[in-house]
Image 1 (cartoon, rainbow, N blue to C red):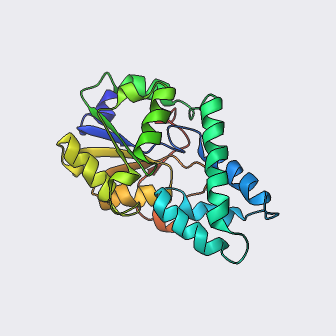
Image 2: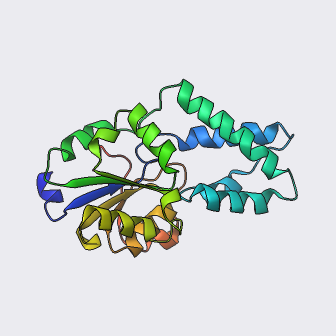
Length: 215
């Protein structure tokens, strides 16, 4: 396994849906908030925001739901439901995550997180799951101008680590994140979460696996 990583200087991870099994929780909280207004949202609307920053996601949902429910009223209810869920219950990890991080942390590699989640919440989640200790750098969605699939967040992480993007291996679950890391010039391994990989993204020719155990 060490040979597999020997050509890289850093490994960069997305967080929600990749390390943390939080996307399903977020979706169910969104549905619950919408149902308070007698509206059951279509998952096809929600999936458009996966991998994007909160600011970008709010714009997308506000536009998509404008003819159905008052998003500006739904959003704070959704946020409260989600924060209550992750603060009052253990945050579940995706399969094989802790074992994988424990292994690669022993190699001569820099580890970092590139997440669309806001910085304060991202750090809180990583600390609550005892994963924060593995990472040298955490760059969040509210620290960059452009959301995934723009490569800015990955280029920012590489710069903070002091490594060339081509020497980085990125792990992503979403298509938006995969496109961002690929556009930054990194090697990408995708571990899909709630959404199947699109044909457009499959055409990149990157590796797609079912879990960190397969890696």
